[in-house]
Length: 99
Image (cartoon, rainbow, N blue to C red):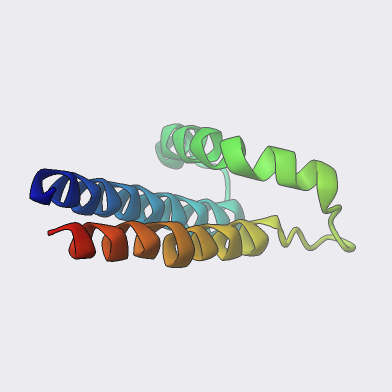
């Protein structure tokens, strides 16, 4: 059973790393949206916006902006933190017990 426990712990760490990276992408997307359009930042903005859009676009259909404020990145980060706290921590607990 220790093999399954180690597998679950490794899986939890990989998921946690992916979630942290995606939270970083969402924050970077929000920061880049305030910067002007320059040629140097265009490619970075394009890539970051495309990655962030995978989660933000469906949320924007449900949660409309209030005035000029788009708060979907905040909601997306809350969802990712919940997934990290619930799913990843559950995998870590199960993996630790199986060791």
